[in-house]
Length: 109
Image 1: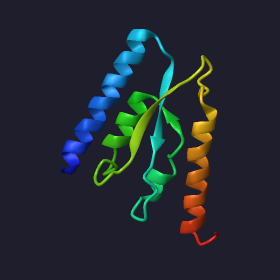
Image 2: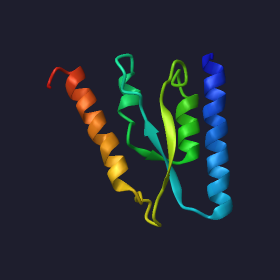
Image 3: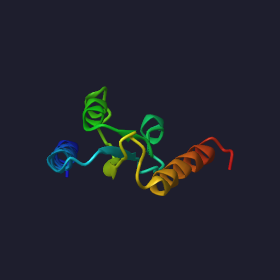
């Protein structure tokens, strides 16, 4: 698959998930999940475990060359009325993985 096909699939899934949540009136955000592979760009890894609106995800993907060669995914996360994840342990696991990734990359581990 080429980058443009992968990008189109990501946008299609994002739109479908967003439409379902809006139709069902489910408060939600999308969690950025970086591949955290050796070729991961720091700007992609830094977002791993963070929550964004669908518009924020689309805007980030459209900026610069973020979508080129991107192995990241965006996972639907239900949130409470204050925007806090209903599954904080999952979010924390990604944040911990991100911190370990940067520690290894910077030689601190």
